[in-house]
Length: 214
Figure: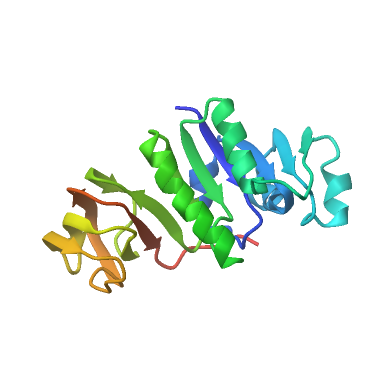
């Protein structure tokens, strides 16, 4: 499976878990997201954007990286352009590093994009290192979150027949409306399995006590 990491300009904490997730992936940087390449030990194959959020010294440091430049006045964000390019290059698995935190409008847009990508059969994870977001569509799912992780399920539409297993507070065939706090602040205790009959949502995971690298 062709795996790509998209480097975005949001906050990012380097953890052992995140390093393992991005290891061996192909990498596209969106504008100021290039700053995460070195801390993550990644080589960037393409740098894209209007470069309005890139600090000056990175232009010299990454002068050898191929670039695609775009005007500031455009109808797609730099992150969306980078995701689109990765799909053109055959991406089947995406890690959106630096997608969470920072500007709420950009973060929410990227979280919503994970659902559209999942509906197209793309495996996708959004991460800040400390927080992860996973799209939830109808079906049976097994998610990779270790025991001790905090977990919340956010309904973006009415969730019909939602079951949660491997949690401190499991759920069996419940309906959850958007805005409900029923599925907030749970904790993973074992193998996390989710069954959803109908609807769209997002799982936010908080891995426990992540070790960090400076």
